[in-house]
Length: 96
Image (cartoon, rainbow, N blue to C red; front, side):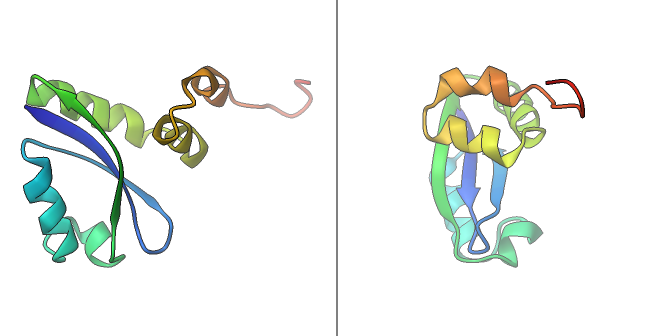
């Protein structure tokens, strides 16, 4: 199994990662042994995760979600899937 996960850091930023062992990775983040980003923003809290059969799929999903805005990530976390397409669209001046 593999996982894509979203953490909320102490500064309220969102961190997206992937791993083979979610429990172990969360412990690493919590002990300050995770990524440099989370190490400097402890404590962290798990907000969301998805499970995959293949590590490569979890990694691809991680990269996809990393490219999303905070609003879109939070819509995923809050299971507001109907909002995702609208949050993908950019507003351009004068487009309304």
